[in-house]
Image (cartoon, rainbow, N blue to C red; front, top):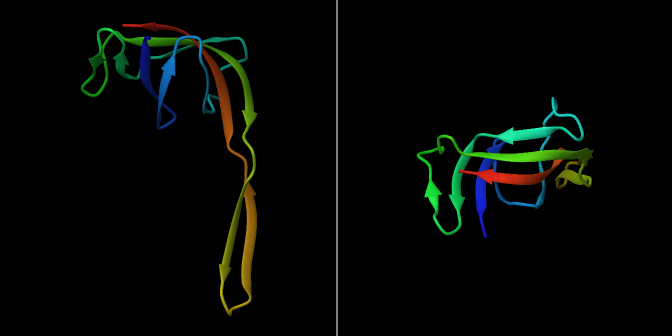
Length: 104
């Protein structure tokens, strides 16, 4: 099984061909548009290749399926005996991508 480790949005993701993955929001990408990830750190499988830090000429091609927001995370702060408490929530934006091809 061929896989790749890509970097996008300051995070690293292990992806397989045909897999749907939620990455940090890619604002300039429209739904249905093809997208190319060129920051490939490693490609694994029968012949693994590891970059230093990136692999030259390696790319991962995907298709943007949708944009959305994840479930709300509640942040609660409290200081005991002071009468201080604060609560707020956060929903992280994401882009869902279908991985089409891993090219070395």
